[in-house]
Image 1 (tube, helix red, strand yellow):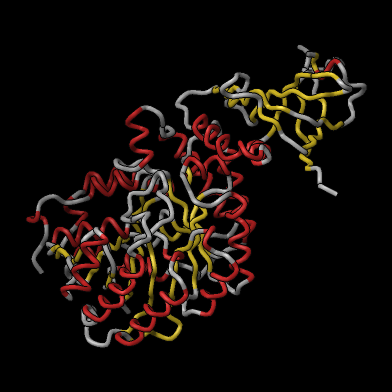
Image 2 (cartoon, each protein chain N blue to C red; image 1 turned 90 degrees about the vertical axis):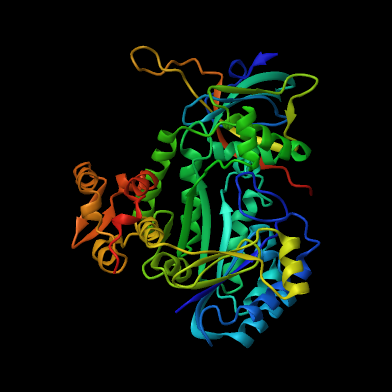
Length: 137
Length: 385
């Protein structure tokens, strides 16, 4: 499995599909972080996705038959007395969560170097720019 | 003018924070409506002969579970035994999932002219944590549908202090609420009561309420956002556009008499309080089979009345009228608690102007503790009038 940041051609926004959520991290910051995989250029890639809570809500609702269970698990994780909290979906009991018929529009991020200048090497953390649902013709 | 409260003690499912009296079995609903109709007749003189009602309030439970014909039976009985003032405020609490187009059409055709919709949140995981019956999507669509059905006089309920890593979910909930353009918003802090689902989970260690500081920040943001959007805070948990206060709640806080019907309902005749039994089968059997209302009368002492006045008025923007407390209720608060009142004003938790004690924003955060400190325990502190 490759890192998505190693496979993107430029820093323009781009789409990924066939996304599976493998973890959700509540880390006491402004955003929540999702760890996910996607098939990109025919290969499985791993990436981190930073998104606001409302967008997480949208993603959870698109998880079809697992939506209600996931929403309860997220609520329980939010109610955990200590953060950061990690909800993992990477086992037989809790397999990765598919987001069928969903395309995510992502933008690239760059880690700042010590002088505060942008490093030209993109980060494997992407921002969520939009959620698109494929319509049946 | 007095008000009428009707308790509809049925819910589709139990919200995890709720300790009100309700049943999730709807089997008794029809009989309970019959009993309510009968109780209206039995207690028609509680507020005095031919009382004119200024407010009618259907609370619960979930009154939006009533069908059009059930509502019709109740209104028919009300109009048979009471005069209803022109322009009376008639409120019905509703859950978003009940507000379908047919139900809204039926409500719009009824005398109900104000809906109080229990949204609580627009964030799905929080709705699941609270075990609400509706979805985040329905939170917004129900209000829009109600507006389309002709209900302009709407109130929505929100809950803050729900566990989250930060305050973004609460801020988004507020933004979504303001976008609906309703004239009245009630916002309550999540409280964990023993006997509720969350209370039991907390006892087992599977749920932890957020710390007080977290809730305080959300309350401060609530006040700031409400002001910025033109909503005045007329009571600690209630906000409205100018002139859109809930008349029914205002009557409670001003000590206006009211008649409460249904199991667990309270009544107040201006002197004493009455509590109806909080048990649906017992209530139905007593009213329908024996023609009596199973209730307990609480005789309020002078101390009770003074403490109750403190409790209710300190939560309101009008504040506590110390002159009224002294001359009408026999309690000279300035003499009873001189040091504590001085400390309240020195700390910036309250102001006293023209003999009216009002809590500041900082004081509202401590309203419960301040009220407890001001309560009087000793009847001898009341001057017999």
